Every structure is written in structure tokens, then in C-alpha cells.
Amino acid sequence: MESKLFRLKRIKSQFWRFFPVFFLLVSLFFIVFSLTQVVFVGQMKQTTLSVYNPVVSVIKEPVYWVRNGIEKIQDWIQTYQENEHLKEENEELLKWRSLAIQLKEEQKELKKYLNFTAPEKTKHLVAEVAMDEGSAFTRSFIVAAGANQGVTKGMLAFSPKGLFARVVEVMPNFSRIMTLTDYKSRVPVWIGENKVSALLIGDNTSRPFLQFLNENETVQKGEVVMTSGYVGVYPPGLLIGYVNEIQEDEVRVQPIENGEKLSFVRLIDFPLSKPLLEETE
Amino acid sequence: MKNLLALKKMFWMSAPFLMGLFLILFSLVPINLLPYYHQSFPFVVTLIFYFSIFNPKVLNVFLVFLLGIINDMMTSLPLGFYAFGFVLIFFSISMLRSYLIDMVFTQLWIMFCLIFFCTDVIWAFLFFLISGIWVSTGFWFVQYLFVCLFFPFFCRFSGYLNHKIQEVQ
Image 1 (tube, rainbow over the protein chains, first blue to last red):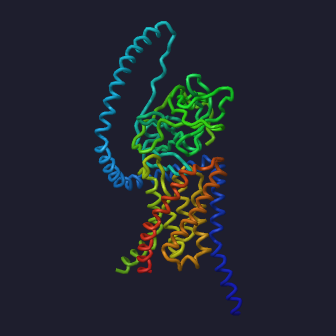
Image 2 (cartoon, chains in turn orange, red):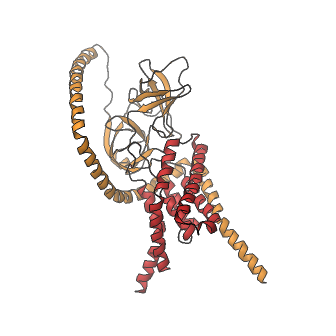
Image 3 (spheres, rainbow over the protein chains, first blue to last red):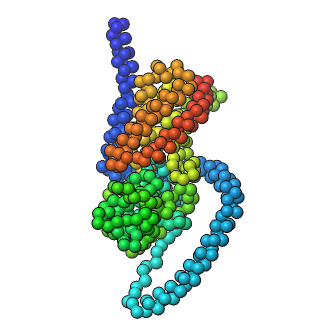
């Protein structure tokens, strides 16, 4: 009798010892489930995020307070250096301004000779960065503006430096934006003056790489990389970055903006560039 | 008075889970600890490690799994990705608990670095299976290093929590 009890106890203890294996299997099942049921899981996540966001907003207040303090001190230290730099930049910009005025006039004259239709005006809004889920595995943000504020899927996110992300998920009051460096990001691009076509692929590093480069065409280090507008997700001609590293089988691009240290982003809708293909993400 | 005591007990008993929840939410605040890249850190694994050794009843496997699912809910990664890693840590510790429980702090730290390294490698492999892309070694290592460096802080804090829990238990 005693030995039976002892055996039962042992079985029970072994069961509880290996009980986590059940949860490991459940986790694996969930992974497969979310890869197959993308829409359903996406909706579930959207609902949960709406609950979490107010909590994160409360947590981030003291963190921001400290961060702003540190940044202020850094700003004071850098003011003199920045002032010198700004003076130089201002001189350069004044030159460009006069050139721009000249070109504008020239363009006005030239338009008269063309059957030119101006593109539709773009819609844009500014949103606060609410959550930053950047890790070794993903590079995206949650911004505090959603469908209620006029955000639509496919809008492009800009920092003061330029394009760096795209809206991939829209909730009522929040949206998820995916940076160009995220592993899911695919951007058709042109490189340099010759407009060499390629696909810019994110891999969670700070420098995405180029794929499907034509073997007959060459690219040089420092050449400009801009959106080509193929497939229609991105309008053509938006600056993304510069060719940064050329190796035998890999070309890396340094984006003009990685999205770090951003408190606000500008979301712009380009009506002329609606996606032609539904994304599979 | 009795109700107050029960409430106090309930609070301290649920404190590890709530702390875990806080750490998950905190990791999403756009704080940018590093000067160049935005990156969040799964500090919650330190809490899971500590309580899996010293008080697995208050942060049991179900709660660990739940923490993982909550973390997954907030990221664009598939559901179950972080949950798998968290439960894996819990499971490996449950296998080694008899050795780990008698270890001094430095030994615990080394063991944490080892177990978290293995989990992080498995995460990277799982990520490769999902996306077909190997994670950037730089980002991966920075994430690993930061969590390991902050282990003593979170370990002390978890020790304090555990002490309070044992007082009310």
C-alpha cells in the first residue's frame, strides 16, 4: 500500500516536473496558428494594444522626464558646435534657395508648353510615438494616431530627415509603423543616376541590403537610393539612403533615417500610390 | 483587519506577475538606452529566472506562459514566440533547481548568462525558421549583454519581493 502511494507520488511529481513541456507545445502551436491565421491574430493584437497603450503612456511620463533632462544637458554642451555648423548650413541653403526660386520660375514657364496635370494634394498628420518594440527580432513602432485620426494603411512615415517607415496596421486610435530596416520590409528602389532597379530588403540590422540587382549593371559606393514606385506601395523618387558597402555578393544601404530617438513622426498619404497588390504580411 | 491582511497577502503574492507585466510594458517605452539604435530588452527573463528557482509557486508555469503571450501580443512577432522562450527558461530551471537553489550569487549570475544564452540562441533559430533571416549578431549580442549586465539589479529586487512574499505566506 505504502509503495503504491509512494509510486503515485513519484508519478505526480514527475508529471508536474514535465508539465512545462505542455506549454512549450502550446507556444509552438500558437506560432504556427499566428502564421496561418494572420488576420484573426492581427485583430486580437489590435484589441490588446488598445488596452495596453494608456498604461504605457503613464509609464513613459517619468521616463521621458529623465530622458528630456539628459538631452537638455547634452544640448547645452553641443550648442556652440551646432551654431557653427548651422551658420555654414544656412549659407549653403541660401545658395540653394536662390537656385530654387530660379528653377521654380523656369518650371512655370515650361509647364505652359506641356499638358500638365498637378498631382492630388497629399494628406498628412503628425503622430506621437507611443511604443517602441525594436529588438533583435523586430523593428517597428506604435504611434498614437489611428483610423479615428485619419490614418490609413500604406501611409508613409517621415522624420525631419526623411522617409523611414510605413503604416502596416491601423487600429481605432493607434497604428503600427514598420521601419525600412524591419525584416518584413521590401521596397522597390532605384540606385544612382542610371536608375538601376533593385529590391531593398530589411533584416533588422541598421543597414538593409539590396537584392535582385541586375548583374550587368554596377552600383557605386555613395550612390543615392530612392523609391522606384514599382508595385505602387511607395511613390517614386523618395530618398531612402545611400549605398554604403559593396561586397562580392552583398550591397548594403545606409538609410537617411533609422527612426531612433523619435518622439513624433509625420504620416503622409500619397493618393497616387495606392498598393496594387495586397500585402501578405 | 482580516480583509486588509488578505488583501496585503494577495498583493504580495501577485507582485512577481505584476512586476513582470510592468517590465514588459516598460520595455516598450521609447526610452532608447543606446545612442544609435532603438532597442527594447526582455528584462522580464531575470524575474522569471529568479522566481523559477526560489518561489515557482508564485510565478508558476502558467503565469510565465501568460507573460510571454502578453509580450507577444504587443509585438509584430507571431504569438507564442516569447512565450516559448519564457517557458523554456522555466522548464530548464525546473530541471536544474536542486543544483541552482544552493548556489551563491556569482554562480547564479553565470548560470543565468548560460541559460539566457541558450534561450536567445533558440529564439534566433526560431526567428530564422519564421522569417528566413538570421538576426543581426550585433543587435542580438547587445540585447543579451544588457540583460545579463542588469541581472544583479533585478535579482536583488526579486530577492526583496520574495522576502516580502515569504513574510505574508
